[in-house]
Length: 224
Image 1 (cartoon, rainbow, N blue to C red):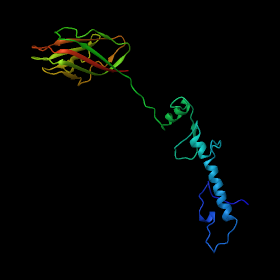
Image 2: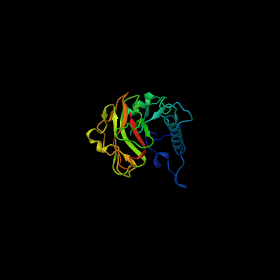
Image 3: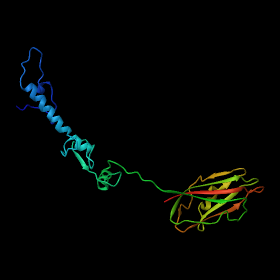
Image 4: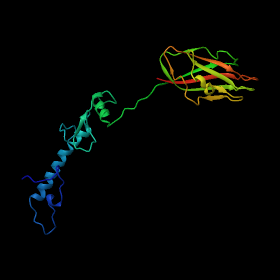
């Protein structure tokens, strides 16, 4: 004889499962059959291993290509298939579009260093020119000397093609006060884009009167 259960559309309680009192309650078939039906309903809801029943928990949580959604509703989530993170792009795209997940992006950055050994003189080209193979954005400029100048400031100009990247504000460019050995750009350059094929050159506009400084390195950080 079949029993009755509220699960899975409702929760059972002492009444539906038939609570009994020792020595008082007459034992009826419902005291066995109702809990039996509740157990069967729970097993169906959980599901057997590798079940094909889409409403079961085993299917929703353990299926290799069908997911579940945390959207405050009870139900099967959209299909996921396989190329991104082992899952298919069509499924991932739907989650990204819905704002459920986000895909991080990384901006490639490239470091280019130019080095001049020994001392420099006014008007000299600090290094041979560098030619970029693609259009890049200048993110930062840093420079260093093994030994800083003395007697006066050593100032450098960075040019992308004919243009000084700091324009009329070259005071923000690579300048080394007496004794200084490091420089990091403190202002945004006037020229931010280095076009594909652009030639980058470094010129000295002023040098320390006693010592211009020794062994100069300029380092650029570019991004696409």
